[in-house]
Image 1 (spheres, rainbow, N blue to C red):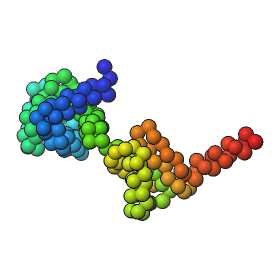
Image 2: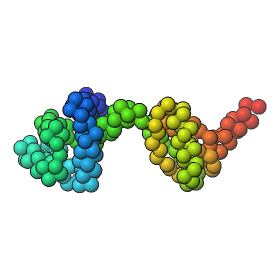
Image 3: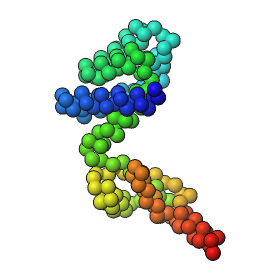
Image 4: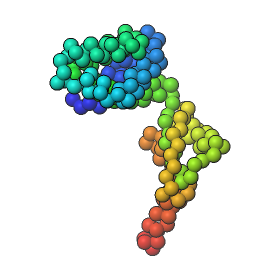
Length: 180
C-alpha cells in the first residue's frame, strides 16, 4: 500500500475521532505543531522513524517529545500506532491530508495566485472575491511572483485554472499565426 493511501487513512481516522469528541481543530493544531518540530529537527525524525533503532527506544523518545509538547492522549495514540506499524515517517503526509480534510469540512479552497509582480491588497481582495464566487466557498490565497509571466495573473484552485497571463496570451497568438 502506498504512503499516500496510508496517510489519507490516518488523517481520516484522526478527523473522525476529532469530530466525535469535538476536538478536530485541536488535533489539527497538534498535528501542525508536531510536523513543524519534525521538519525542524531531522535528528528527532530519524530517531523516531528509523526501524534500525529498537522500537522501545523510539517509543520512549516519541513519548518524551509528546509529553514535553503537551499533546492530547488521542494524538499520542495516533503516534503510538504509527510507530508500532513503522509508519511514523509519513506523518508530514498525514498532516497534508488532514489539512485538506479540514478545508473540505469548512468549505475552504486553497488558491495559488501567480503574478509577474507583487499584487496590491486591493488586487488580491478582488481576485479572492472572484475566486470565492467561482468556487462557492471561502478561498485562502497563497501569492507567488513569477516574472516569466510577463504580466497578468494565473490563479489555481484545485482543478480550476484561470490563466490571464501575457505569456499564455502570446502563446495563443503564436498558435493562431502558425495555423494561419
